[in-house]
Length: 372
Image (tube, rainbow, N blue to C red; front, side):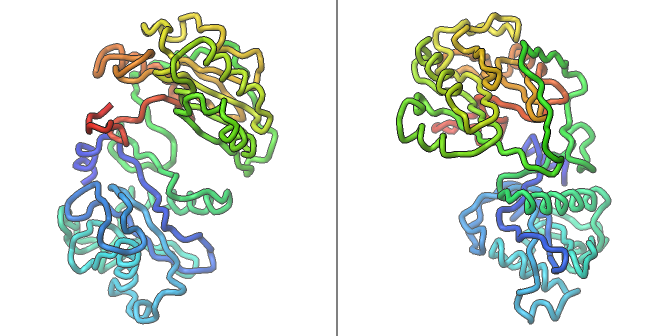
């Protein structure tokens, strides 16, 4: 099934549901990995339940506490009633309709259990069970990572629906860790251009707060926007391009100075967007091209990235302003050698990638339904 999902969706990640409950080791939980609904690997839930109106996709992970569930469901544990209630509660779908291809697991009395006689042994629409009540070894690894991630999110007070976990695309297997997989042929030609490399001074358990914005189009010059940003408290502010509208030297200089004036972030990192690059040399020359001076700050806390990396607070960040040919500057022809050269330039040890364009097949369509 994984091969089918990969062919359909391309890049495959595991989505942690927004509707996961906070994890408490003293309580019991039921969970599921959902692969498809009605044979589809992407869906919009219209059946009711907590996720009614929300979109979902393969490798959707959900876990909920069973302690306060109706007693009638808990009495018949072992007959699938617990997982049946989980699916109804979240998706509004009765599992007996055999519309959901998924695997079930549970956390009971302090022990993680990977078996579900009722859930894992029944064929569903678009999926055939191997007849084993136990999840596969890769699925067990995935659930273990998922649970540790939920614990991490709880401790950092993050929101589950903003998190995803990668699946190894080189080996076509589920991951045993959360390390990003890379093209083995990709080059690692990161150029620092004097950007500082800083180390964390806080304990390993501290949270790094990153605020990401983009396409503000001179919003920084408006008092209301400026006030909102200055009220935020974070370690790193990232702007992913289109901070201006006309690509003038004045716009670029004004924005850089605005970043320099922000004292509520330890670091401010930004890239250009297609609208910022109007009038710049749009020919791709990698990090070898001399960057326009109005983009480069003398303030060591403000960093402009153009096909290059910096490292702050132990995080390796790579920034690329290029987008598929559309309008403005920093453009490349779709599916071209130029495009391949751009993305192969991303270092293998990159922790965070900033790009002005969206990732392939993920929210990358314009208003006409054309993939960017």
